[in-house]
Structures are given as C-alpha cells and as structure tokens.
Length: 191
Image (cartoon, rainbow, N blue to C red; front, top):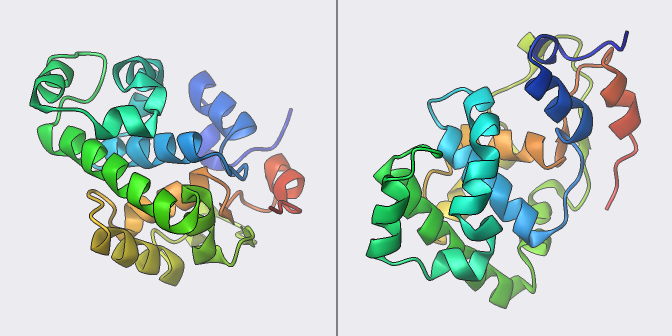
C-alpha cells in the first residue's frame, strides 16, 4: 500500500489524478492552458467535480486549443451555457475566452505560455517539504505575483489562490507531503 497525501486516499478518480498528474511539471502550452481553465472553473467548487467533467470540458472547449477558444463568439458561449457536461457559469466561460486571447498575446511576446508562466518560479519546481497538509498555504508570494501579472494582461478568474492551485497542478511547486510516495518521485523535477 502506497502512502499518499491525505486528500488522495478515498476517491479512485482523485487517487489516479494524484498518482499520475498532480505536481508533474508541464511545459506544453495547450496543457498549461487546460489547467488554467480547469482551475478557474473549479473556483468555489470541489476539484472532484471538475475531474468528473474533464472529458466534457475537452470536447466542449475544442481540446483547449488556444486559437479556437480565443475565437469563440457569443453564439458559442450560449452553446456552452447549455452544455450540462461542464460548469455552466457565464463569467467562467467568458473568462476562458478572455484567457485564451491573453495567452495568444503572451505567446507573441514570450514565444510560449510555458516560458512566461515558469518565470514566476525561476524556471524550476519549488521543492516544498510539508509534513502535513495543514502546512500547505493557499497562496504564496509567487502566486500573488502571478495573479497580479496575469490580471494586468487581461486574464480573469486568476486570483492568488487559483494561481497557487494551478502552480501545484502543473508542477511549479511540489506540495506532496514528505511521506507521500510522489514527493520523492517528483523531488528532482527540473525543466
């Protein structure tokens, strides 16, 4: 029996996500955009709900192809609002479109979203050594800086807590507790 973070011990979907994805460094712009949208959609909800709807999100949002999402018009937004397979929140759906447009601008300026976003952690994973989940913060100076900069570039639903959740998901920080088997496996995560 593997020792896992306490939040990942009961639900098979959460266990799979914890064991395979959470905290693994991501450098693919499409996948980074996917996690940005999913983290924004999760605001005020349980992550389990978003994971349950993830395949629906991929279908509804054209597999998170940034250029396609950036081109969504009001008709497409209405279509998404009628899609019971995703979180039907107008502000969150509109934020996904705004965020796609902002990612395109970042790609022009920095070559890739990856190059831009990883600069907030000095281009390498921050290796935390939490003994309990109670020690894990909901935001950090890095997530505050990220949030501030993303908002200045037109991003929506990117507060410091959402940004920190994003950082955890895409491996910018290793927040597996030290006695979790994944902490050691991801300890040497580099670009």
